[in-house]
Image (cartoon, rainbow, N blue to C red; front, side, top):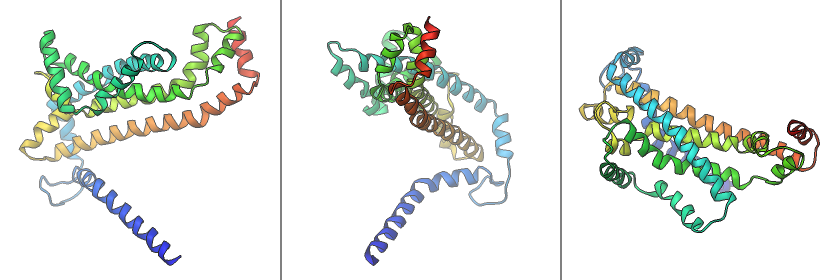
Length: 285
């Protein structure tokens, strides 16, 4: 028992040391965003750097670009990811195995290589660097992440629920709206939030596809830190950190909600409980 207790303590110390190594720089960043001094020593608490950040027109322009790019990327990547996931899970066709492998290429491919390839493709297509090029570049890799998240949800989907709804008189659209979408919806929403976060944080691909007037927040920070890390950059980085963490927490909550609430409801319907199927049939009559 004594050796086991010491082993548990050592593992606990090791875990805390790893977490400290990973998250201490982030904590320092957040703390010094409230520092009243421009230098590395602590003078006192202040919010003036956040006020200065919101009064900076370049930062606000970069924020607008980031939100527009992330929003359109989320919509396009979610649509492509949903369609691709349904095709891969529910259909058989020549080259399916190759397509499944290609889905993972943007995930494992180094961002620099993908950025260069996208730049070369846009030049050949005659598309000038700018906001549209950034959106297309972000969709190119975010769609793969959305596909993986949605496909994982579809793999465990019980299609007998759809067949039962259609046998009771529901049409294809009613079946999709009342049965398929509620069951797959958490996966779709999680994929959308993941695509939004990846687009909001991207630097490398944005660097290769951005043009004049299309600078995003991460690209602005990357350019500004070359002159030194100012308190405004600390405040801006903290803001991005909070938004990103909030989106990820929301995505994880949606995934857990789907596991804890949707699956039990699906299991009850699969056991033949009459309430939902009868109501479905009534809608379809």
